Amino acid sequence: MSKWLEVCQLDQVLPDSGVCALVNEKQVAIFRLGEGEELYAVDNHDPFSKANVLSRGLVGDLKGEIVVASPVYKQHFVLSSGKCLEDESVQLETYPVKVVNGAVQVQA
Image (cartoon, rainbow, N blue to C red; front, side):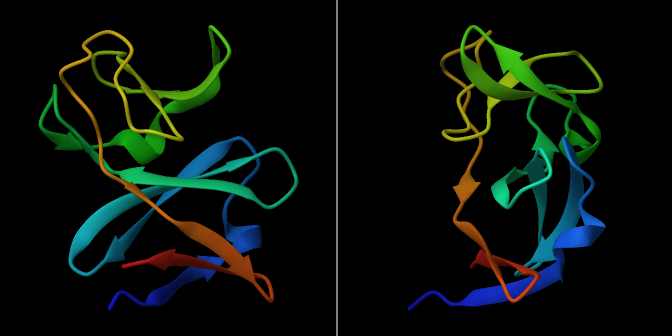
């Protein structure tokens, strides 16, 4: 059975940016959209550069999809599904994420 792990406080995730958290010894990139509590969590590992950098990527809208652009080679990953827009054979793992009493929790 999976459990929810508290990884940080919501105010530690700046609007329209990401942070990295260690969840069960795996790096997870957590992104916050706007000033609210809309969050996404995906692998922090960029499969193209082989570096743990996606939490530092730029968040935006591309063709109606909310994406993060890798800071290395600029591939775009859909935050809700992990799908890479430039290479459909590549997909990041996604994680359920929520806010409880101001704390960000990721399902592990």
